[in-house]
Amino acid sequence: MTAEDQPTSRVASDDADLHVSASAHLSAALAKISNINPRVNAFTDVVEDRAVAMAACIDNKRSAGGKLGRLAGVPFAVKNMIDIAEVRTRAGSKINLDNAPATRDATLIRRLESEDAVLVGALNMGEYAYDFTGENWHYGPSRNPHCIDHMSGGSSGGSGAAVAAGLVPVALGSDTNGSIRVPSAFCGVFGLKPTFGRLSRSGSFPFVGSLDHLGPLAQSVSLLSSAYDVMQGGDRDDPACVDRTIEPTFDSLSADIRSLRIAVAGGYFSRNAEPEALQSVRDVADALDAHLTIEIPEAERARAAAQIITAAEGGSLHLDRLRSRPGDFDPIVRDRLFAAATVPAAWVQNAQRFRWWYQMQVLQLFETVDVILAPTTPCRAPRIGQKELVLDGKIVPLRPAIGLFTQPISFIGLPVVTVPRWVDYGLPLSVQIITAPWREDLALRVAFHLEKMGVVRMRKPDTI
Image (cartoon, rainbow, N blue to C red; front, side, top):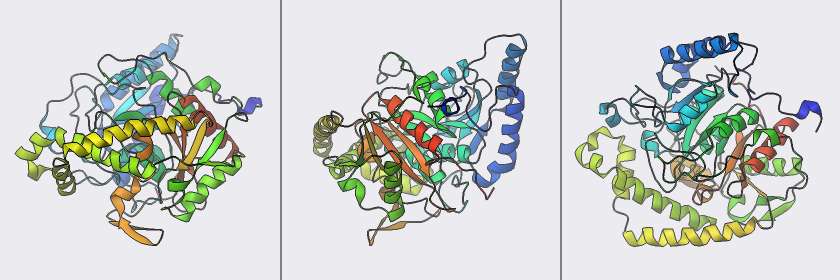
């Protein structure tokens, strides 16, 4: 690597510069939100007074010669299922607005602010995170900044739209079956779903406890890595969060990748997708000189098992709300949750047994490879309101098809970085960079090299 290939700063985005005051960064972000958000509908809440006070504190520290945090002055926002003190945690629902405001910030917000990032608000999402589209019955759809008639992806649709539109350089989302990776793919930004248990979920509204992850979306790999690094660490308030030594990734982004064993996922991951989605994986593989193909065994069954577990845990969580306030749900979400509540216990038991077996099979693959490449979604972002999709000549229901390639991965908690791939001036495509548990560093390193080569990148929208 030459000196120009090194990550140059902890603050690596178009909207962040260590020589510009935090207040100036914030003013620019607030102006963009005011001007652009009405078109993309990414934000549901803006905490301007809080953000102004935080930015002033950072600038005072700078003036006094104090040490600035690694994310000094970087504006960020969070999916509205993540607690912000004195804000009602909507989780995309109408029902949750009857709850009292949160009394404290979620753990990840506190960790980002401890490194001088500036929280500016909460972001739109699919109701109760049961969504791949970014459409919300109560607050309207979050729209794709590259074409506002198209989906942002879900359920972290506001997170993807906010980053892609340049409203904030980094956002937090959640991923149960693909809800960080799908919006990252549809909106053309970088996303990280960490290993299950790596980042605390404390202070977030749950969906499926055994599958839920929190993680960042960002405008660059450097910023994605920086945000991830400062959020690491155990948390006794989240029983699933592993008390594991913090393993920074930023300083190793530019390390050599030539010794990595990189393979393309074949079989299940090489069909039921638009040709451009599969070609994007081949393009990335060619850039990495990766010619090995492997098959992830029983991926289709893994997706089915993930759907069963999602239905059972999600349906159970919302039973009281379904009984008492059925009319206050999005009808599509309500009907899916009602159906979920009837899943036989034997199905769930079998799905959990299969999950253990499948995890062992996939982990064995990482004895011979370090990185696996796969499509993120089978298509580009569909139009808002679209109900069906044509894949391999067959008409299929759109909503479940969006998660074809993400669900078999999150089902066993593997870390994944999604990278945006542009093949023309239409909507973006995306590739998953999948690694063994706890090896986020390798996925980020590969993503960083691809970004430096220009093979993957974020592109500013032309339409807003």
